[in-house]
Image 1: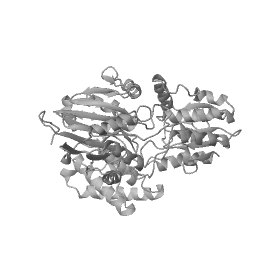
Image 2 (image 1 turned 45 degrees about the horizontal axis):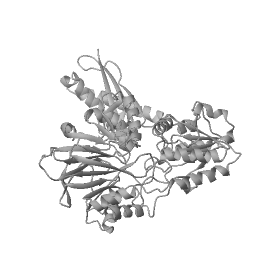
Image 3 (image 1 turned 180 degrees about the vertical axis):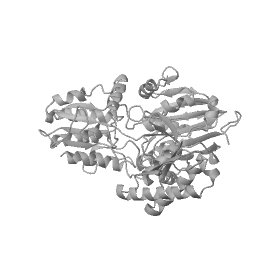
Image 4 (image 1 turned 90 degrees about the vertical axis):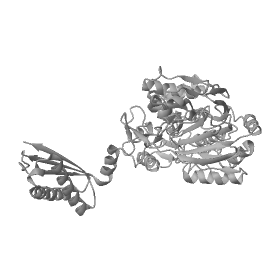
Length: 559
C-alpha cells in the first residue's frame, strides 16, 4: 500500500517509522484529510553490529513519493533521537519545520553545518503556543524532561483529539524551564482524548522519577567530600542544560570553578544562553583555561558519558586531549545512565581512567548523581488519570517496553490498546484503533564518513563479515589464454596467527593452480570464471582449516 490518503476520509491514521521497535530514532506520521504531518526525525547510534558507523537514520522512503502531501515536520524537543536526522534527510522531504525556540536554535546550527539554513522554512512556535499545520490544530503543552522546552503535542482534527506525549516526566523542580503545565493537561482530558501515543522508556521502573533538585543536592555533598583534593571531572549528556547548571552550582558551593570540555557542550551552552537559560549559573571557563586553576579548584564537565571514541573523556582517558589530563588523586563522576549497547565502550573509558589512578564514581556508587528524564510507572498512571484516553498506543520503546505499557494502560482503565511496530499503519476511527496495513520501506540507512549507505548494503555486509571472518586477497598473473605466468599470491588478514595463515595461504595457492588446470580453455580466458574459481578454492580451504568464511577479493592481471 502507498501512503495516498483520500481527502474525504474521516479517519485519522498513525504510522510510526522509528522509535516503536527501539528506544531512539523517533519518527512518526499522522495522516488526515489527504495530508500527513511528521512528528520528530531522529537518529540512533551504531554499535558492535555496525562497525565503523556512528549514526543510523530512519527509513522515510514510504513518505517520499507523497512529500507534496507532507504539510510539516513538528519537533517535540531537541534531543538527537528526535532531531538528529534533520540535516541528513530534510532535502528528501522539503517541508516546513516547526518547533519551540530552544529546539530551533539547535536545528539552525545543524542546518548551517549542512549548508541548508537558507533553504529550510523554520517556524518557531512559542512555548505553550499553538499553530495550524495543514488539517491539524496544534497545541504545545509544557512538560519536563532532561533538556529545555520539551513538549507534549495535542493534535486536533475532524477525527478527534490525539496526544503525542514526546519525552517527559513530572519534575516539580526542573531548575531550567518551568514545571509541567498540569492545568493544560487536565483541560485536554476534560475535552476528550481519542488516543495517547505515550513514552514507554521507564515503564518497568516502579514509583516516580527523581527530580533535578535531588541531583544538585547530591552533587554538592559529593564535591564536599573531595575538598582540598584533586580535579573533579563529571561526564554527562551535553543536552541536559539543567545538569550543567547543577554541576556549576555544586562547584561554586565548594569553591571550585567549572569548565566545559567538548564542543557539543559549548553548542548547547550557547543555545541555552540565546533563549534565556543559564542566566543564574556561574560563568563557565574554556577547556584551554582549566589548567591555570589549582587542581582542587576546578570541576571539568566532559562529553563522552557513553564512551564515545571521539568525545573529550575518551581522549582524556587515552592521554590524547590537548588541554585536559586526569591522573592519580583525581575523580571522575558519571552523571548519566548507560544506554543499552554502550556498556563495553563505557567500561573501556572507565578502565583506562582507573589505570591512570582516577577514582570512578557511577550511579551504582552514588544513585543520587543522576535522574532519568522519562516517567516511571506512577507518573504514567497519573497521566492516564488526567487524559483518560479511549485508546493507548505505546511508543518510544522496544517490543518488551511497548507490551508492558499496554498492560499498564489496561490496568489504568483505558478501554483499548494497540501495540505498534515501525511500519504499522494504524487507523483511528470512532473510538476504535486497528492496524490496517504494514508499510514496507527500503530499510534504515547509516552515515559512514559522510556517505549515506543502506544498513544492509554490500559495503556494511562485507565489513561485518570481515569483522567476524577476516579477509583474503588473491593476485593472479595470467596470459591471454589463462595460463599462469607467476605463482598465485594469497594473503590472509584477520583469520589466524601469521605462521598458521602463511601455511594455509600456500595451500590455497596450490589449490588455485589445480583449479585453473581443471578449467576449460574457454573459461580460463574469462576473468569472471577465473575469479569465481579462485574465490571458491580459497574460501573452501580456509573454512576447512579455520571454520571461517572470509571476504575474498581476487585481482587478475592479464599480460
